[in-house]
Length: 438
Image (tube, rainbow, N blue to C red; front, side):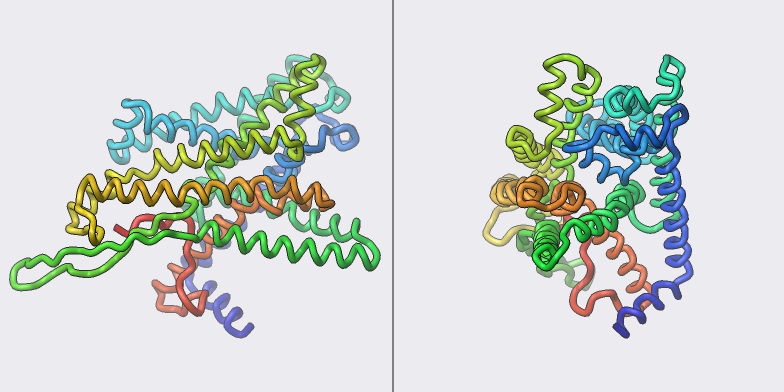
């Protein structure tokens, strides 16, 4: 306990770090306040009584910190921006024009950011219409009409763009990755209410024992997710000795840490597009097809949803790993720097060796990711409350673990740069961003 308070004192004794933490807290307060501002023209009392809930809508509500069910100006949060970023990132691997922009340095990145922002506006506009038509009951709209729909879509677009601006300010002036921190704080804000509701529902001696078992299960699930996030397969690297002038350089040993889950949370975010059929079903909710799609894909505990969800995660894990980790580039970098894998020839054979290792570790990583993604459905089937079950896995838990590790890693680097003792007794805090050691 003494070490903990010493670490806290060291953190706040660094002026730059202290200012960044306070800035982050201030931006997050603004973000949370905005999530309680209801769209003009919507009656919050009637909305609370008739709001669409259950299944995938509760999952999205957890993901967006409750603003989704409150029909707030931040109802869509930062999710449209993430969708646009994913699309642009994929285009940089498939379209020559985007590949050229990516290689142009700062000017290319600025152009890609502009394209991402414009695409965010279009995606938000489309999702806003689906959100208003599919999730806000007609009874809650005070004066339905064209003006309400147009004004609400404009406000939701402005809310998403403001969330994007807040995320950029946190990245520049605060601590951690701003976009990820905004998502995490929305998820964490739902945790106290979920755990209180679960404790209240489990009354009596038997209920108390069941609640303790649920907490223990959650603890082991979190430990498993941390292991999934941190697990690496180290490929040994030997650097050749070089004589430069009168001195001998090189000859050291190193390694390439290939993560078991190199794709991170991205495959689940890709597969999370399953909620689009639910929104489309809300738009055409009066038709038989819309009713069937809505009942099937709005229930995240149904076998159809989980089968399709798990299959998409497997596909996207291999796809995203293949386009983000280029074994040829790694092999070329090693060759240029005088490095080689012991027993493997530099160049093409090294690239094939790395690709083989990557393929072997991607399958178990993808299967583990599928298990984590569908755990909330099994938790609900086991009797855990739906709100509390969302924290047993899926995108919520992966994002929370990843963002917390990244933030702790950044704080750790500040402490070590100022010659303070680190946060951990043995080893350094490792975030998700550490990949290549070559």
